[in-house]
Length: 187
Image (cartoon, rainbow, N blue to C red):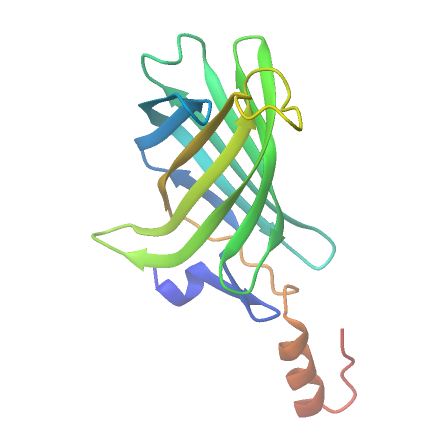
């Protein structure tokens, strides 16, 4: 599949093409504790998906990860929705980390590096960084409140068939179409 079919530009912002991008297994770094005492370990992404659905009425980009490893005796999942997309590939993430019966909200960021071809299957590259509270809530004068952070690189393999939606146009492309085609409207 050609790389230009795996990339879409919406109002000057590059995104992966619509579809379910399968995440490759790989490590994530997890650190927890206070400012004075940090515990760090590595966990693995067992599987996951980057879902991209951008259309004229709805735009949704979600990230779902299943984590495995010694630090996670229960099934652990991280689910995030992209709340904002910056022009330089920075995505604002809001979501939840669920392990067993407990769940913690988190906020974070993902840096989208683009779509690349290495070998037979093209992939999208992301670097995620998220922070979630793991202990009591932080107090204004207390610096030892516990928090955990997750950081790592993710590779999402391109879907076998890209969901092409001819109605997904950027405003600038619609303007160009309207000026080139007499009687065509703009978005």
